[in-house]
Image 1 (tube, rainbow, N blue to C red):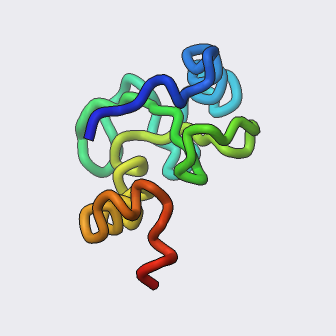
Image 2 (image 1 turned 90 degrees about the vertical axis):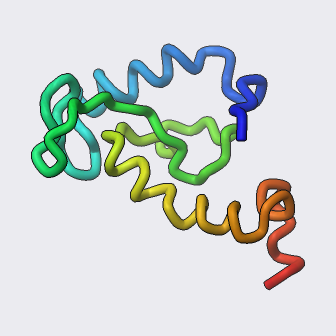
Length: 100
């Protein structure tokens, strides 16, 4: 599914940089893996990502973002990804409550 960049805040690059390198000091806020170094568990190079904690692109409070390595980002998003695959468009349109 392609990313709809129009839903991101206009200053997303600045927010992302601040979350990853100023607030988190270049470390994953879940496991502590350092940006640009091998991951302690997987051995792959770590590239920090600013993730949406509430899985909502429009959420724009500082508490709504965390810095995460690839492994932690995938783990954090696993449940939402499973639901999106299972329920498809209805889940993406936040109409899942009609089916539960």
